[in-house]
Length: 389
Image 1 (cartoon, helix red, strand yellow):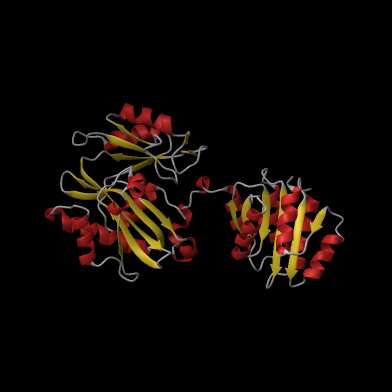
Image 2 (cartoon, one colour; image 1 turned 135 degrees about the horizontal axis):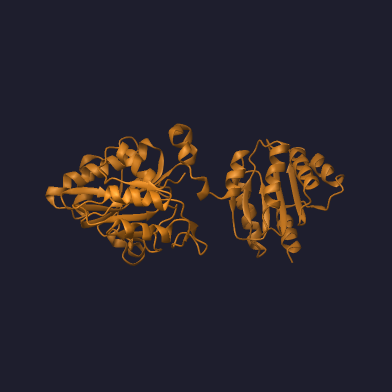
């Protein structure tokens, strides 16, 4: 589960990390009120920051500096309710429903730090660079030697000596090193305590006067650990999620929208990936990744198939099921029920193998519906591709 910046900063405060004050506004009236509260003679201005689940907001015009209340309102007017296009959103962008207002800070130095699970090396790592800011992605490509990596304990987080070493490599002066190391330790402990798959700060800033403060925050909670983070469950912003993904989750399935034309329904993530590969060999692409799991009933299968029918990009549906725990006759019943309630606007190819496969094929054959049964993995993919012509 991805968090907005303002939510991530709440977790930072919970971890004891110093932060400037911030206010979240959803209307221009709130922007005017909050900007007035945050602006004073000691601050150069206020930052108006779009809250969406995507990086590169500054490059897309989603982070603006305002010297006055009127400037803050004018900046927010250009952001709120409008799609923001960044390098991570795609050309369609994401609509901004809220902005974070926070005081502008006098920055002396910006660095980059992130804590994540390195799946390839099966370890927790801290990624860091002395050159933080908006160009960090380009830096990783053009000067990878400027990006450091350090493994840390999955039990305790960064050790003090590790944190001090990283702070030194980030270029902190001796007088700032202990403050910087303390922030790094707290971030690593937050990463572990909250079952995060990512904690990223870009930039972590050395500010005037003497402070080491996260000016941005990106946190992602591991979905499989949400049962341990129940107090964060209502932090999910459903407006940021794909409607199909949310609908599938409501009945225990996994759904990801893709860019192809063949709608796929399978049981098991491995089979789903193999189906994607089989379609690729035919030159076709899947329209989705839809895994109903190993224990779905007919009602769940029906709901899953109706998800496929709601996708206007689907030209052909491919149902590819290997019955182990899942019974093929249950799959067949779900598909037939869905088709009878809402006639599918596309041809259907079904491959059933394993438990109750014969019974499942019989249900399909006796349904009177235009369903093409196929045996063989490759044959199913080729038939679906053929019907796309």
